[in-house]
Image 1 (cartoon, one colour):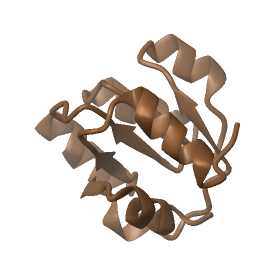
Image 2: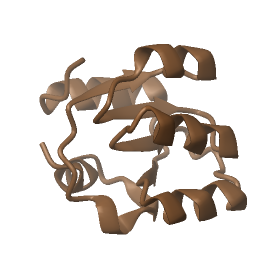
Image 3: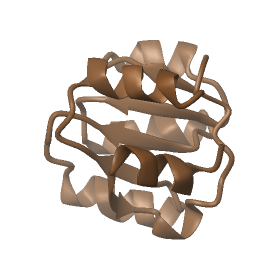
Image 4: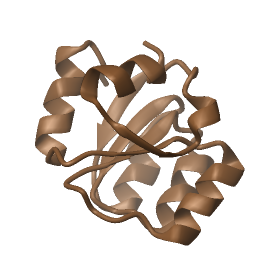
Length: 112
């Protein structure tokens, strides 16, 4: 499923990387520990986390993720948004909890 369709279905807010929403999402991953995301997220996955700092962008770029959803209306740092924009990495935000986002992703067919 294309990331643009997920954005629409989950009513996500696009904070950066709006030019890269045409990417195909291959699965999902939810974690707040950066080391877990480095080890567990796979290329093309959509990462759901509470964190919105520069290291999230580094890991998402390194792992070649489709994008990052920052849950619970947590703020995303300005330097992180600037780097994500530079890397064409979609950063999406929502007021939903991580648990709810993961459940909604599962419902629409995004699996591991």
